[in-house]
Image: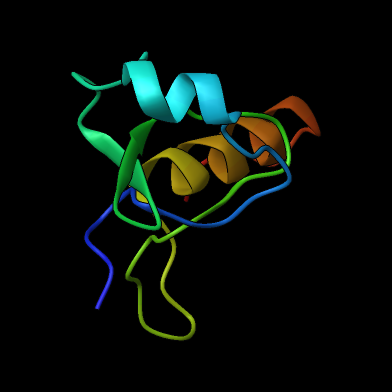
Length: 73
């Protein structure tokens, strides 16, 4: 099972040179077991159950509602 924040699918692939020189070897993020960095289009493991939202998403939803005129109850 993937760890929290691990890239489970992406559109960026390391070149052979990057793999051989371990250019991203000190990164805590991994893609297919290889240390890497996040790139646009990556699918990241966020182990929330169905219907749950992250704290950041909840804050964003609350801010969006407030900006639309919906105040806290």
